[in-house]
Amino acid sequence: MPSETQMKHHMQAYLDAFNRNDLAAVVALYCDDATVEDPYGTPLKSGKLQIEAFYRQAMSNGAVLSLSAPIRASYSNAAAMAFDAVIDTPQGETRVKVIDVMTFTEDGLFKSMQAYFGPGDISVPVVP
Amino acid sequence: MPSETQMKHHMQAYLDAFNRNDLAAVVALYCDDATVEDPYGTPLKSGKLQIEAFYRQAMSNGAVLSLSAPIRASYSNAAAMAFDAVIDTPQGETRVKVIDVMTFTEDGLFKSMQAYFGPGDISVPVVP
Image 1 (cartoon, helix red, strand yellow):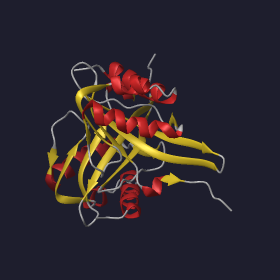
Image 2 (cartoon, each protein chain N blue to C red; image 1 turned 180 degrees about the vertical axis):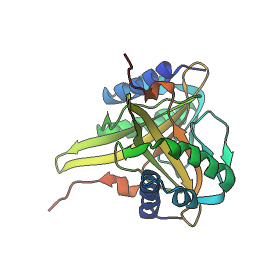
Image 3 (cartoon, rainbow over the protein chains, first blue to last red; image 1 turned 90 degrees about the horizontal axis):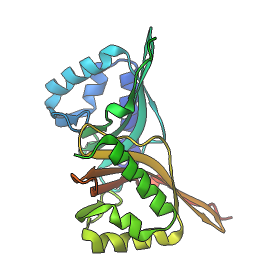
């Protein structure tokens, strides 16, 4: 099982790769048969191809992810983190308040990801 | 399915009930066949009796829960929140950094709870 330190390191690596728009580095954090449910309540993305397509789209709008609180690990193969995804637009800032939960393989790769946010966790610019 | 507002309200009610040491109110937020995995990676507590026993123990040390960031809802029957549990002792403060994920019944009761924190998320007083 990966250590707490390893899991937190990989969670931080995920944020860093996303924020430098490094699609390959984000996808490389997932194992081959990983699943992504982002947001929770929507169909699963399964496997590297679907996950890569999902992140290509997700990263195309220039969102920046910033932690709201320190990353949490666990007594088993999971970690969780609260963050905001912020997109600056000419009209102002769009902000999505998210909590991600990842489970891990023995090697410390992401086995599953679930992103918790709802419509009420998204704030959009007020355009007069 | 409960609304985002209802789910967030029940998450806040959970924090408030815990903080006023109201065991009955905490347990009443769970459905009869609910499960609690706190922390993630330890055996499930199942059903009201086990859940009540768990919270009686958990609340006996006077921990106070405070949100680290706003509660997140979802596009389905789940919500999540990051908080710190703080216990003041004569030797100083013990702090546990936690993320809870709850799923909900149709009626808005907790169906499951998973608490994410590991040994590294617990800080204890330094006693000279």
